[in-house]
Length: 128
Ligand code: SF4
Ligand code: SF4
Image (cartoon, rainbow, N blue to C red; front, side, top):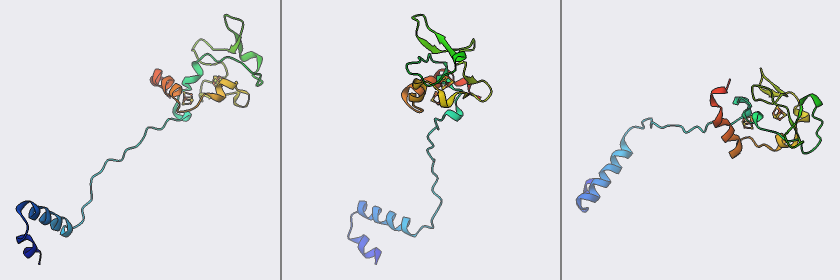
């Protein structure tokens, strides 16, 4: 029945139909594919890159005095130690030790936002 139909078609159409038939009759094979996995941007795989930025204290969230410094203009900022990271950062876990009292700026710094990605790019070798 297929051969009768092929006779009525020009060569191009016949080729297309044969291919379709072959594809239909061939046993199913596993189709190779590459799974696209987006790189996960998460604080848990980051060396607290944003905690090297200057953080101004523009509201009172209860940051302990020992973590507060004064900038050149007399404004309150988070104290940073010689390694560049915020004094309130635990150096082993790279977690904030005053999370519940962290400054407003820290609360608003959004994981995955362009600023976050930029900071992560800057110190990729520091990831633990
Ligand atoms: S907000 Fe971004 S830069 Fe900051 S610790 Fe999380 S992943 Fe790292
Ligand atoms: S207060 Fe906490 S979240 Fe903010 S910069 Fe310091 S360690 Fe990071």
